[in-house]
Image (tube, rainbow, N blue to C red; front, side, top):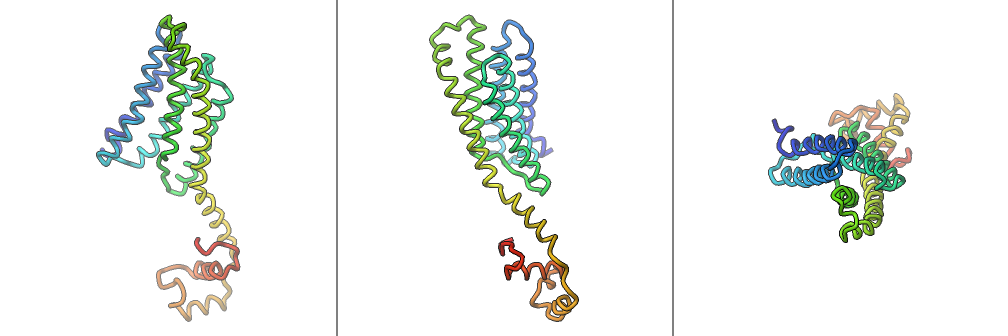
Length: 246
């Protein structure tokens, strides 16, 4: 079945690993952070691998376009929330990052209602990479503590670099979200145009008779209704205030 191809199976596997990651971070045992780090890295690798497989073997599907960014959001959100509990991630940054994800998900919902599938953007991929790096640094610090290496040189370097990594991740997250909304702003413009066109007055009997009398000057030849033809005429003359490029 094409929709359950190997690329989509990798995406689903990422969701499954996310569940085990949360379980490992939630249950206190000797190597919980080490296990969580391994699971997170494996899940992150599938994020890159499923896209490569889909593009190389032409396995891109609408299901994959929906599941891939969803799996990313679930993994990143779960990891950040778990790190808040461990005191390794700033709460306000996590809230800002997750808020951006909710907003983009809302945008995808609007697009889906219009039967438009919004694929993942390159800026979104950069955002995901930055978040993965910051989260991996925090998880590595926790793993080093479990392995009694908290005083090692790598641990000290990570402790110094991690705050900067979170700032970089936050910046790319906000910018990529703003670009995503800017690129797809037409979704909302089209909605406003449709609402305005619904408010246009119905054509008078005289206008309708004129349209029927001269069919070659209207859109009736291609099956468009009289009201639509009159509305189009009004748009072209600028009487409705709408853009002629509707």
